[in-house]
Image 1 (cartoon, rainbow, N blue to C red):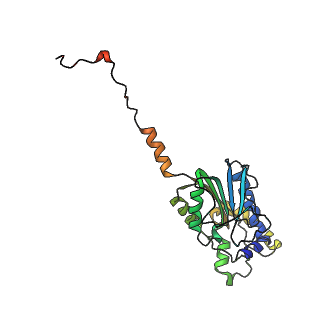
Image 2: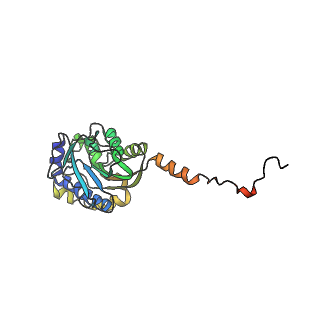
Image 3: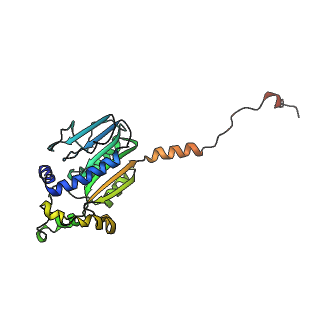
Length: 247
């Protein structure tokens, strides 16, 4: 399944998708600061290329071909070999779509991220021309999509993130042209990029999400500390005290 997706990414449609995603990753992650960043799932793109953290790992899940990039780790996305609250940034390029348990993967990412750590996710939008083409392939033979993975809607993903104490920082959509086999066929629909971005932005074939881990416990502790009144515990001066039995 994953091998098929990697092969598909070498096609004109796959390269069109990767080009859009590279631009999103570069723009969003360049100024994300910290010490430790992890990308899970390569699939032909180094999403951390523009990031400047001193430790950056590219990790494959077990059994996943590496494609054009050399991984530094092979991991189970539901049991990462990192301590709790030890990473500043985790990137998931289509990783959830290919995971056997995407919610468990997100829970594990939440565990290893520090407070205020960030997660960046790309996925295929099922409510798009590409999603429609996959569901009705028999009637749309000219569309060219990989059968690998399960598309996860951005609304559903946002609900998952909210439950795991993430706050949405940004979401963007792109790739409005239909998924066609050849470059010429794709080029004919270039006008759809401009029109789609203006008139139906949420129906782009791909989405890019950045969210921030905001632990509720940490927020409440901070608010309670600020709201707590200062109680004076200094005893009254001895000179002002009256001796017992003075009345």
